[in-house]
Image (spheres, rainbow, N blue to C red):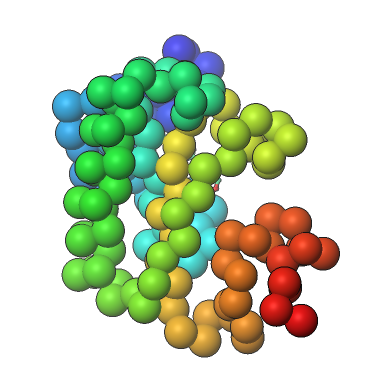
Length: 129
Ligand code: AMP
Ligand code: ZN
């Protein structure tokens, strides 16, 4: 799709370099990273919703996620990761080509990291209070 930035990256029509690639998937650094090494894994073929990505492509993307994790461990030595997918506008998706966020985390990068992904709904995140 010509008007999709991630299709352009997957096709090599952009200045964004790939971090890794596989048969059905590519990975690259997020242009606006929330932490050092924040990467995105996408299927080469355009689908907006990850649940509409074919099982074979999805399996391939999750395998590439492992490869990218290894690269990020070597390059940035993070202490943990958040893995996330925003599916549809209600869940905060802003780029309409399904993607998996791999967000390296570093001890001390926020004051209290408890809950992690639960902070998508801040009022409900701290269940331990
Ligand atoms: P989401 O809100 O889950 O759809 O995430 C979209 C992600 O894509 C955000 O983290 C953006 O920083 C990132 N992003 C947007 N445009 C680009 C781009 N051209 N190249 C790389 N990452 C991008
Ligand atoms: Zn696309």
